[in-house]
Image (cartoon, rainbow, N blue to C red; front, side):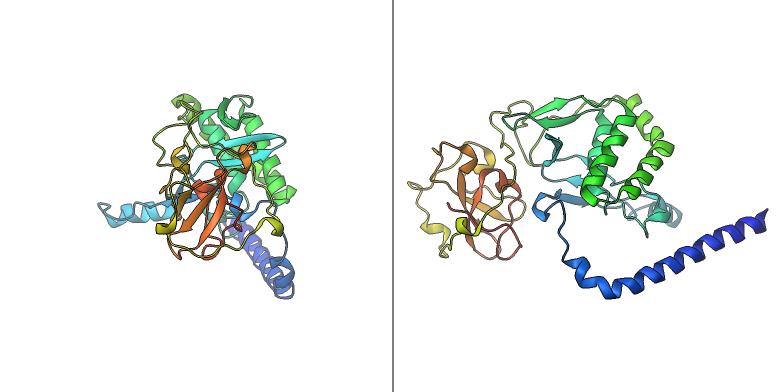
Length: 319
């Protein structure tokens, strides 16, 4: 029996290695074609995550360090509220939520990373498993608690559907859903037994006011809009000292006040169109703390904005 198992697994490993070599050979001739394909989710719409350190240091013994190294999985903290729109609903994961990516055994990480193709469906799925509910944005883009989905199978189905939309590999998502059906019940039961209360919604980890308590004061999500070349302006480089407070004024929320600086070192210099009829068109003058670039950004972008020059951020808009 032992010899049979050794031969069986040896055959599997050999076959996988041969398949890998074939795919590697095909990669050489298709590298340019692969790198130019468009993705469904743009980089600006990806979740902003911070890795949580692994606790190998200061363990009492070498054995403890080895156990942490082999079995502990990297966890990630959502730094800015993540919004994902699917079938007309805007699912919202609050800032500060921690998760470990898709639940993939470590021995398979060489084939499928837990923060690879299944990152976005895994994030929403982990949130749903923990709280058996999720925030969604209403017609005014305020976060409201949503318990429309309330069963393990329904969360697993949503995981598969979002995966199909994001990575467009149905067979991969079906296999991942099968894995959840086989092993997900343990995590589901653990969270149901804990009966953990949902956390008040926060747009960023440093928010003092939480949107679920005071939604009228929190920054509102605005769907990303395509910026055409006609709307991009050339902005002369000026210093922050030249900004007149009589022309550029602070917004009414924490992230729109003059001198607010996000985690990417992008600072608000104020707005001069707060009275715009369409609030989605309110824009702010920004300055990059790294290179000093002056540019314009929309209200909903400020908390996660990146410099268009040195950080590959979105193009500037009129301000």
